Amino acid sequence: MAEIIKILIAEDEPSLGQIIKESLETRNFKVYLAQNGEEAYTLYKAKAPKLLVLDVMMPKKDGFTLAKEIRQEDNAIPIIFLTAKSQTQDVVEGFTIGGNDYLKKPFSMEELIVRINNLLHRITLQQSAEIITIGAYIFDFPKQTLTYQELNQQLTHREAHLLFHLVKNKNQVLDRSMILKKLWGDDDFFNGRSMDVFITKLRKKLKNDDSIQIINVRGYGYKLVC
Image (cartoon, rainbow, N blue to C red; front, side, top):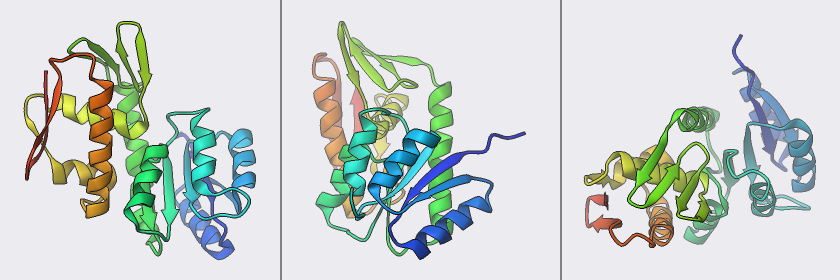
């Protein structure tokens, strides 16, 4: 029998929260529903869900604050943010905190379900991947760590997946539009800015080996050279 995946939904609009819960339960997910950030954190601790869907604007504790607290305990659990905001800084903040995806309201239930399944598939892929050598670094994709000598750096979920795709296409151009659609779900302007931020972070984390470069190939994408 297939494992029943537990999902925590934090949404302060009761009707929307119930619609999401019922839609996911028809797909055989076990869903826990919270209406504020404090209740969501309590459920997270008690129920150990496999994936989180967090509304950004919630009473008592907003989605970003909740995600920061959870990321201090669990760096791997997938997080999808629900937001009515579309400003670049909000999108970037969500990914910087450790979010894996976001949906702007209003959205379709089918789109949410597709994004949930994509994230769960990535987790399965990550768990089956091997440890990879990048120059003088050891990249442990399943554990999301990057090690240089005695320096061990923890990567976010999105940093790990972006680096994984760069490594798999080493010395070749990684198509910008393709990777945005694969990891962000859309190649729009906001997601492009977000990816640029993550590329900058990866460059800093790889700076101890001068032979490693992430090159911006203008108009096409990025290339990992090592």
